[in-house]
Amino acid sequence: MEAEKLNIAEMIAVVLLLVGGLNWAMVGLFDFNLVTAVFGEGSALARAVFILVGVATVYVMSFGYKLRRTAHRVSPSMQ
Image 1 (cartoon, rainbow, N blue to C red):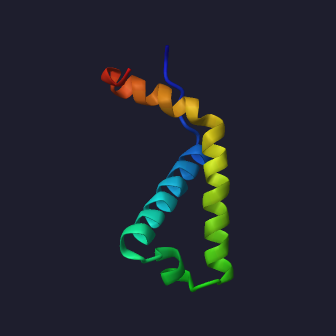
Image 2: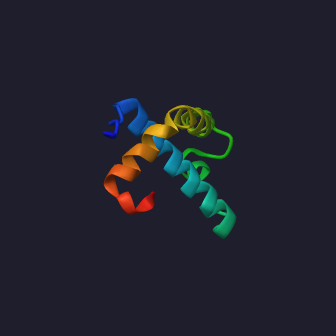
């Protein structure tokens, strides 16, 4: 079975998901929110980033099977 490649929208969504996850890790570990530090607490840009991360999360859930296939192709030992 050949792995499916991610298109550009899917790659952007994965990156946003990683950025969001790392931001939440920093909030939990250090009480530091990078998004609000960069864009300002409650600013329209900060809200837009949070919305984009949320939308990206839902989008990644819709094509997550591709990520699994790609991971299996890269590392067969993960099966």
